[in-house]
Image 1 (cartoon, rainbow over the protein chains, first blue to last red):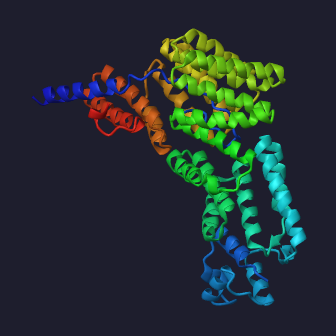
Image 2 (cartoon, rainbow over the protein chains, first blue to last red; image 1 turned 90 degrees about the vertical axis):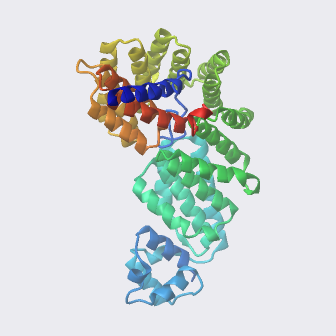
Image 3 (cartoon, helix red, strand yellow; image 1 turned 120 degrees about the vertical axis):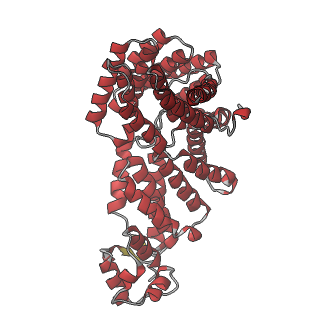
Length: 44
Length: 431
């Protein structure tokens, strides 16, 4: 019984994770540097 | 002579309590009045306080309007040159000069401007971050006495400090605070353009693309009018990135072509690396991995600065990972890790975690849970929700493929949770 519940829970969680991962590819862009210390080059 | 602002600034900078400084010289409450410039202390007290703080009384400058004006002019001109030229060597030279050749003014307002510009230069040059934390703290005690322009400089310093520390939320709140009051701040056109340019980069990092476009257009107009071509080129790079993010791929490519044309026409060949990289990234988004790889490699070949190669190496690794070319992933991850170790620059540590994770994922033994957890912890520390989300999925899938369903499930949940935060969503119903 416990195994079945775990499996069911897993399916629900998996579904959400996949759904939230359907945005278009987000390759790392390189933003121009303002200065060495101000060069956040990977978007969050 | 009024020296309270100087005493207070130095005492707070040294993290010294009033009671410690005052001991044997005056009472703490008397010191407090001195620091607020409510009392002018005797020469003896002034000397003793300055001596305890290790300050040289010879640098004290009385009220001399002409000297003050001259110094202020030099200070503001240095500031403009450093900000607009983007020349790191110039920034270092100006910082050294200001640190070593600046008198202490009785005019507390000029002293505040001096401290605020000095801090801006230190942020640019990237001196010890813990020291800057103390300087910001010291300045925050004087905010009541700042005029509108000094308040702008103070907020800007805070914003850049938090931005550099990876705490984007806090940085953005300082930037927005400046935005709300921008009309009241006496800024010259160049400084407004710089501010708009900075804001566009911040909003891209925050994925607020339409606001970023609005700001970069304003900055571009100014740089065009003043024929500042390197800055125009950078604006086109930013426009390309924003167009890519809203899936206007042809417009993105057009912007990069304009940037490339400027490289050719104005002999700005060192800027080609960043353009190639972003064309690679555009191809990656358009699912053209093979083309993306070609451009990332071109970018690495064109870049003169090693630290700039890191992002293109990461781009390559991601493409090879998508194509399941394991030996290439490992080869480039090793290159990246070697480069990180050679550069020994802590601000690049996120790359180290990316490289380690991909290398481990494509190794014969498969993903190391330890490496993945360390990477996830790191991205939690720097509030990089997208990468927490991404690597939690990688770890969850690893557990799933190894039939560890309970662990897999908990990481999928974690991935979902951070996916919500990344997308600014609270419930699944909002998706």
